[in-house]
Image (cartoon, rainbow over all chains, first blue to last red; front, side, top):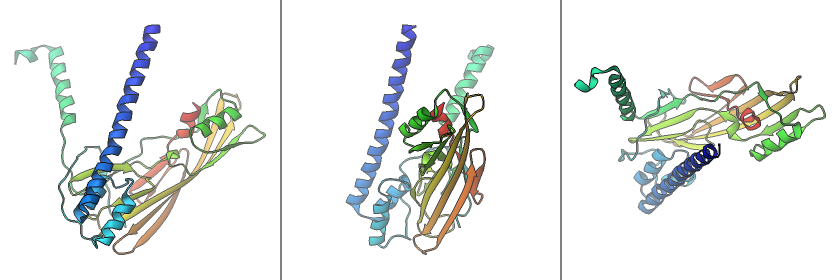
Length: 95
Length: 192
């Protein structure tokens, strides 16, 4: 029974470290992309950030920066960074 | 192909093929995609917690202060977004894909759908929860009233829209036919 408890504790700790690490790395990744956008200070850089982190911590600043650059309505094609593959359905018009 | 002559090996090969197929990525065109909410609300919860203990558990979960009435029922009013599940939005733009909750408080959606320019989406929610002790003392009946408001601002055109939906612990509601929301079942999960 003690062995089972130790095994359970091990797996709990393992997954806690695993999940904690992935959340931390996601936050770090976002900060990196944001800092890269700020250092470039181009519309492409801010659109890159918004395309990767649409609900991110720096959304306000990104929109403000695009406004200053006069680029709210002129996003251009940029190089993709990541891809995921969820099972989803495509949405229609928002308006 | 001698390897595939026995049934267990065939099954093994089939399993490997299926596992590998799950790792293959396919591309999707620019747009906004929606994954429906996976949560389901509960109409009751079995628990040995007293009303005071249940209130403490809800507070410890960060859901706010629950008020305990003389009849042993609890009332909780909260704006915590975790109480509702509005699925997941997946935005594909410029070759990048990003996922975020359908009820994310603040998000920027890219052009490429129907409206030019960026669209700011702001979502807020408020929830009124009532827990009534079950007659046999085994737990609580759960009554939830949720209200979710979504605001869309088209940053280029200045167009704005605002819509509020309402649902309870066992129903769902949607913003048009797009994003649907339902109870996350968090209250029952906390008390269980």
